[in-house]
Amino acid sequence: MNCRRVSRVLWIALVALVACRPSGRIATNAPQRPTLPSLFSGQTQAGISLTALPLRDTFGLGAPVEVVYFVRNSAQRSRFRNDPLFFHFDVIAPDGRPMAVVAGPEPGSLGSVPDLVLPTDGILGRVIDLSCAHAAFPARPPGEGQCAWKYTFAKPGPYRLVVRYGPVAAPAQRPSADGHVQLQSDTVEFVIAP
Image (cartoon, rainbow, N blue to C red):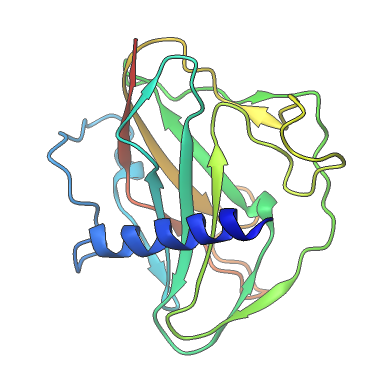
């Protein structure tokens, strides 16, 4: 990651923190629809919260749909597993239905998955293109046209997004015994314009 990209991510994270109200919810006048009510509440666990923000309110049809997501530790130093496969993206289409993610030809690679110690007020984040996400540990440089997964934004209208973090487990299982947190961002909305 070059210095320009790192500076951009840090700037976006700072803007995101300023844009959040004290409750951690995103300031918006957009109505929240009753579809999938379980997606409408953000969570903080062990002082760690997850926030997601689109880089713009409106994206053109066929343009990259970039979102920044980050975890923030507001408590004392905490262990955090930086496993890209623990992050899950739920997108709701304008008609209120959950969108299916499309797997691409680029295989994901686990690579090294470090356990980090997030300091108090530490932030760890990433910018991702929902219309063509590259593998977390790509075998080739990003930008060669291959997607690890993607969402197809074929219709104009308002879309909603929730980002979840946690080990892949059956719904009946709660936070795992190995101490990993399970987080969910608040719902954010963005528009695909014709």
